[in-house]
Image (cartoon, rainbow, N blue to C red; front, side, top):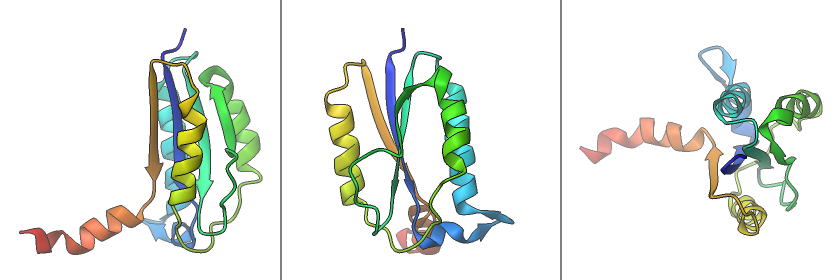
Length: 130
């Protein structure tokens, strides 16, 4: 039986439409999510929450699902993925993810966010830290 339950929050703000190395940031995020799913065990669980300033719903885009079923669900959901728009408002996403994992009984409950704002900020201002 799987030990891990993970929720990934994906930034769908307008900046995720821009390119990095010829690939949209949102596509990089989705590919990263698929890579994460392939690194987990079949009975581990993965859910996805999309967030921007307009998406304040508490429901998960992909509910917590066993990895053995995740890829087929993801293939269907990707067809109806919302277009990245607006700004980034992370607090409702953090609250939704916390609530989804709070009652989970897995040994390892993990969440993290995929957002390129932090990477861009670090690259632009890292020279100030020296």
